[in-house]
Image (cartoon, rainbow, N blue to C red; front, top):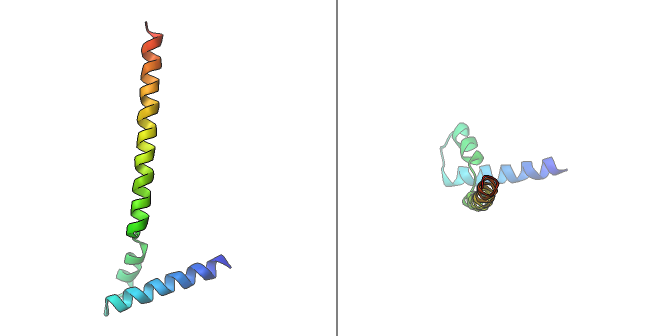
Length: 71
């Protein structure tokens, strides 16, 4: 019943946001719920840094192989 667990989590998050910001309309609350948390942002930023490092390494290896082939 993964859906029911996720629904409970979302409901609790919605309730917490409503408590933090009384009088906020549902549209705004839903928009706030769809925003990633700081932990999620940090995790994705760390993955992006790792991916960029891997890309730069592969690009350098590719450039070196091209240079070696043209000598």
